[in-house]
Image (cartoon, rainbow, N blue to C red; front, side):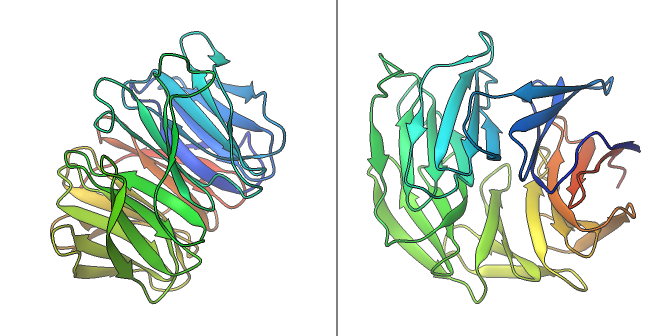
Length: 298
């Protein structure tokens, strides 16, 4: 287990790059990302050409793009190989909190779903990226989309509408809405299993495990106290992870939601969590900016 203390402020997003060579964290109130070279752990700051604080980020699965979202409703798609951004996605004055990638919406092109007051789709590999190919808005009522996720193998996109306490389900190819799943508490984060047969959704003091045919609840993965702040899926498909304000990271069996193991690193409320690309390592970020990385041994 290794701890990193270079950051200060609430960690709002944590992710390994797809090739596993860096671990990246976004901190609320900070105008930059913190990046650790992996597995060496050397720290460096990434200063971005974005006005205002970073609210989230996401890597495309092929590692080509890094899209960074800002509190002021701006998202910047960076071409990692060139270390520049090719365009500017401007939304209304609400934080960009949800980002997800797909290569199914437009064949052989990278499409990013951006969650803010609505969910919109942008083709980053269009013929003229600086103008974007389109910015398709998916149908929904006014809301606030804290998280979006593409199904790994089907034409399905989900969005966590925290304003209306709904999980909205769209077909991103037809750009129509097919399902509304009502929650008792506002859904704040969602992730599919590697097969797409399960969806784990953070909602208040628990994470609800849904099967993705009828969108029925399979299990309720509860923390003893506090709220579930983030969820992650192991690339191997064996388990999900949840992070909570109780300071605990919990592992759950992905099919039926049975509790597997709990980790308490004694560093306060946990606000972000991520698996490494090989699924053997897990990272968690805290309210106070600390990040801990450990080998998952279940």
